[in-house]
Amino acid sequence: MGKLIAPLLERIPKWALVTLAATVIAAAVFAIGFAVGGHRAEPASASGSPASTSIGGLDLQQYCVSYGYDHVEGQSCQAAVDLGKACDWQYKQSGLHLTFSMNDPYSGMCFTPDQNAKGGIRDMLGYCRVTFPTSNEVRPAVVDRMTWVCQAPIDMQIACIWQYQSPKMEARKEGGTWICVK
Image (cartoon, rainbow, N blue to C red; front, top):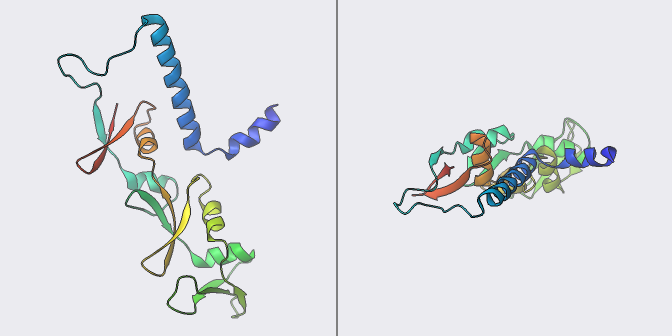
């Protein structure tokens, strides 16, 4: 049985396991609290004191870098695609380079060092998935008209949990800025 489960666990991204563990722990704490106290907790007292405490902001740049991306763009982690490496991956060779035939990001052609054409990159999504295997939602995109990137949306809840190393974190947007509360 362990031989069947171990390969499956290796394919599940670390952030998903952290989320699952946090959910299981939260459910267990809730069940124990309900069984012992027989009632649910109230979100705030009658005096109006807050039910949660702001812990701090998010360092999304560091979060993205920790997963191998170059930078943050909006609410996504991004990394520029090395088109030579994408060609190498596509054609299972090394030393290839990509040249655009016109001012169109889809016109790229992979060439060998001695200028023999191999073809274009047909599976940029596959390249992004191989390059960023822990990002389930990674997708290729064209930015600045001719630059390919691999990008993945940021789950602010997971980013809070990652940054403050606590499964009890919640992400909130206040005044245009994301903060983490406990």
